[in-house]
Image (cartoon, rainbow, N blue to C red):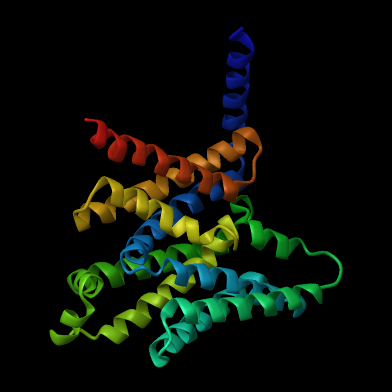
Length: 285
């Protein structure tokens, strides 16, 4: 009874070895590591600063940038980067300058951006492959330019966050105290939003508009279950993000599944497993 399963496992292993010999699969794995590290690093601060809805809004509003790129016959990636950057900064400015709650402002802006994106998408004639690829993601389609952009954003994010780590921690835990101590709170907030918006833009190519927020939030949430110490939590978030991305790529390659959803599914299952082992395990101990 077990022979067919064993044969399937052997066949899948052989297929995996063959897949790893292709340049597109090698680029996908490198991209998975880079994006996993980037998502874990920024996702740690996103989770603690309760910015998950912000990244969600930026990711979904990116549909407008993609649609504009297709309509103008431009590379969607090059349209996506400046659009998400400007959108993220403008949304933060609206949140700061209005008396409404941040969730209300984000809901309004997200709804408007989605409406514009859907209308622009309806104007696209003929082939819509670029648009569909951005909606659902395909990390197997990333090229050397995408890897370079991801690496640059990762290096920039790491330099900014680690060189100001003490200030970033204080800003995360108590913004009022950080302001009293002379930390340029507004500058750091806008700089982080710029990095977050750019990270969302490059991650969309891998996991798509619909799942990009999960890509940022789930690894950090999983790491937070495992550790309450900030530095350990930060590193564990990076490790969870990178490993789950690699496993997701391998799963998608072996079973011929969509790469973006496979990565997020692995992250989700890992979160459930950690929750069951740590939280429920402690309660029954």
